[in-house]
Amino acid sequence: MAKMGAVVTRGSNVKQILANPTLFQAFGAQIADTGVTAVNGRKVIPAGTPVGGTIDFLQVEDTPLATTNTAVAAENTQGVLLYDVDVTAGPANGTVLVFGFVNEFRLDSALTVAPEAKTALDGKVTFVKRNA
Image (tube, rainbow, N blue to C red; front, side):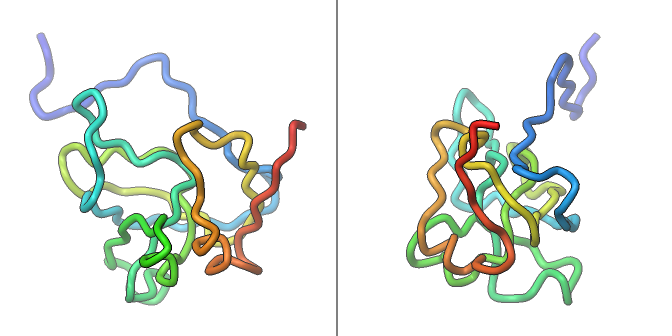
């Protein structure tokens, strides 16, 4: 019998996007579902996606963050998602990397981080391309 209202995922591995998994800082945040397109019936924001807003989520804990991976929204980037976030049922909890090193080779193949978002994160989150 299926559980009502629950999403059950089995046999799923967590994608590791960090280039250095011992040197990073991340915080929990509420991730908004605005502007997210459904693929195969699910709205999943991939790990490594820049997120932010006009209010600093580190100072105001319940501030919802939205994707900022465009030239226009990038100035409000506060971090990147450390893991995929499923917002199919509405806003969801996520983990936002605010300091660390992201290996771009480990990002979802459909995700390209906007140069403007990288600039907004300069000195906080560094993007590298490493095979090892």
